Structures are given as structure tokens and as C-alpha cells.
Length: 318
Image 1: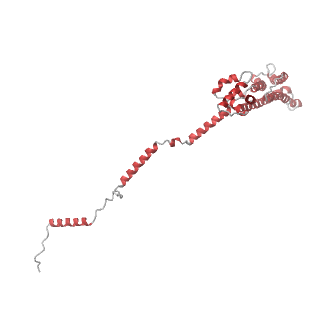
Image 2 (image 1 turned 135 degrees about the vertical axis):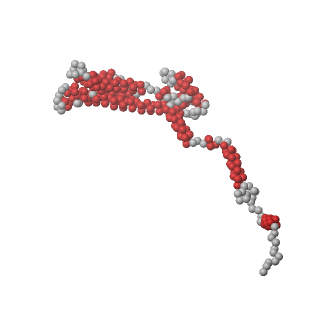
Image 3 (image 1 turned 180 degrees about the horizontal axis):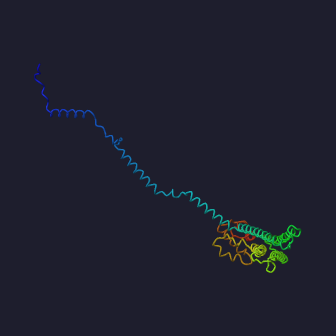
């Protein structure tokens, strides 16, 4: 069986033309999709545009805030700590100018010096006890009655001396120096006995083998005792002469020129001080009827002087 009239094969141009028609038809039927890499919002802005817009807005806000100095006005912890220390130092300095504080500091220092001097004196006399015992024993056998009683010589001398020195020291702290010549002679007698008894066994010609170091070592205690007894009354007399109202003035620089005329050699000038208080009242720095305490703080004077100024103000007002 044979096939007749076969179907002729279309040329390649017709095939290409048909495929193009099919692609065009499909393109008309399916809408084009936006690129996946560039998603857009309703206004058509991409993610990159929105990110750049946010950066620009942030930059505008930062530029406006940088001109505000309010954060720089807030104290940090370090600044507050330093300000607190400075304020405390200023208050302590102001307190140190108060006459009452000056008197308290002087009394405290005076008591401390007296205590240190008495302790030094007691230790110096205790140091010389061994030297006095050797002198008083005069070669007596150890633990014999003479040897034992020799240890009591320096203690009763020291106690008698401490009675005199302690009385003079206490009265000196109370502003009543005790410079009685008889007491001074008694002190020198006791100290001279202690010094001679300590030095005698070690003097040249008395000691079997003279040694300067041993002599100095044994006279060291009596010498310290003499120094303390001599210096302590002088120190206490200087403390008793302190005038805390003058040494610690509370007035400012504008009043220093008047200080010398208001405190002459014979004592404070009540009239001049009263005039100054009146000027302070007129300036509003003191009330119309100031009390003794306020006058004392304003003038930097003692209580007695402030009381006299207050009485003068009352009399002047009457």
C-alpha cells in the first residue's frame, strides 16, 4: 500500500512567525509584574528611598538638638562631689574665724601640750630612777634592806616635784600663772638633787673607768625634766595672753582699716564699735535691735565687748 499526496512541510519562516504570534497573544493576556528586587509602597517609594529619608530626618533632629546647652548645665557626680568639698572647706574656714572656735582650739592645744609635757616629765624622772638607786644604795648587796629602800628615793622626789609642776600647769591653763619664787626654788632643788645623784657615780675621778656615753645616758632623764619644768610655764603664760577676739576677726576687708582705731592699746573703743554697728544696721546687715551674739559675730569681738556695745546702742536709742 502506498501513500499518495503527502502533506508538504512548512518553511522555517512560517514556523518562526507563528511562534511570535503566540508569544504576543500570551503577553496581551497576562499583566506584567513589578521587579521583585524593588518593592514599592502606595506612593511608589522604594525601601532605599525610605531609608535615606529617615537618615535625613534624623540628621535634622540632631542638628537642632546640638545647639541646646541644657545637658552641659547638669552637674555630673564628679562636679557635685567637688562642689560639696569646696562648700565644706568654705564653711570650715568661716567657722575658724569665730572667736569661740579660736578659744576652743587654743584650749584644746594647751591641754594637749600640758598632757604631753607631764608624760614626758614622768618618763624622764622614771628614767633617772635607776641612777638614783645606785647612788642611794652605795654598794649595798642586792635585795638587802638598804638596796631595796634605795629604789624609793627617786619616786618620792618625783612625786613631790610633780605636785609643784602639776599645780603650776593647771593654774596656767586656767589663766592664773603661778610664778611664786619659793615654788620655783623647790623645783630647782628637786631637779638639782636628781641630776647630781644620777651624774655622780659616772663623773671623772669617781668612776673606775670614765665613759662619756654612760654619763650622758644617765643625765639624760634629769636634763629632760629640767627642760620640761622650765618650758611649760613659759608656754602656758603665752596661752594665757591670747586675745581670741583680735586674733580671729570676722569683719571683711572694708573694716580692716578701722580695726586699729577701734582696738587701741588700752582696750576696745566702744564708741567706734557702736558707730560701726549702727552703720551695719543702716546697711541692713544687722537687725534694728541686735542681740549680743549677733553683735559679737559681726564685730569679731568678745562677749563682754559685744555686751558693752549693745548697752551703748540701747542708751543711744533712749
